[in-house]
Length: 330
Image (tube, one colour):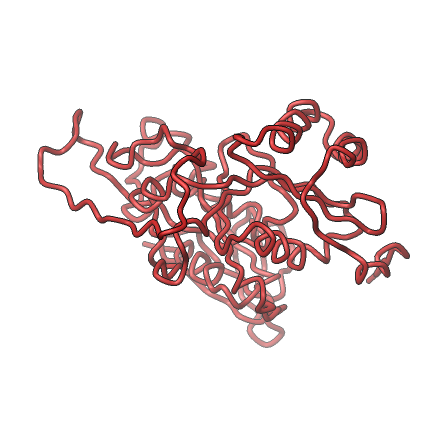
């Protein structure tokens, strides 16, 4: 096993987070252009707008080591919290009474120099402190580039809505009033203000989050080799439950299943002639982003060596485990 350490990482203690100014544009451009050439111009325009326009709905921050910019962040000043509450199980993860209404924000963009990725938690914590925020959300669309901070975020399950209706339900709805607080500025542009909290349609994006409190508590690293055989509802639910534990970081989870995950085999319900899952739709499986969070092995288990704690795959390969979970389904 090989370990690498760049000498510049020894300057980690000198990292400082500040609001972006016009003097930082050139350094930020070099950072973005070096690591992301595809949308560099569009990203730079959004950062400049956040800095130069007071009425912008976004804030820009950067991390420096001395006079060198090593990270840049773009967050929203406010979010459409009513939409997020009606479309995601946020209350299962967050005690909303402990967060002020103005304490919610969305991470729009982030870029960190790979040398300083180990300091991601510190940067995010300082970012929230300077912005006066306590909860940070991140939305993942179909073509969203997964940022390096993804491993620090926690998934929030989306709510289900009836799909057999062609119009909204004609029933009385509970409309909870959110306490905005005395110092809430109604003139601040709301990110996602055009989204209807009562549209009764599943959200087109996956939602992840972190809080200042979670960033202040280091995750306990679990290197145990956990092997789950079978991508049934039970197997996926087990993996999802492990990944949802906010204070644990499971670094070695492997899912073994012929064909990979269920949504890899059937792109839609019409192409799937078998009985579909009653617990996960294809859209929900995509939003879990398991391919980016665990190891998915397209294989079939043929034997178990319990003495040496190995499983034998159909191609003769051996996969060791510390904990083996069998969830092949019916």
